[in-house]
Length: 109
Image (cartoon, rainbow, N blue to C red):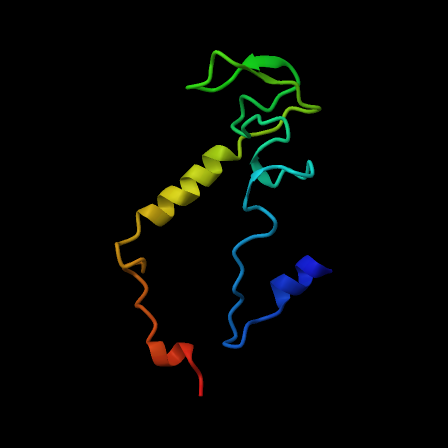
């Protein structure tokens, strides 16, 4: 119900200001897969967070990783791709195909 409310309740200007849910954490602290690394400090990179024992991803390949209760997928590549998209925007931070909003439109009277 909480997620449904977030997805269907518009802001004061009629838009839906949604970025994400419970994702922004370095480490998965409650085993909900919301971090970039597991509670065992294995990266969710498609290599480290597995049931078996494997060498960690570079530059830590001399250390053993793995030992998870399941084999988890690759979230790191998706996060990297999303960050690359944001970094490709012009330095103004506004995509060239979308004009910047006028300040007056952000402060209704």
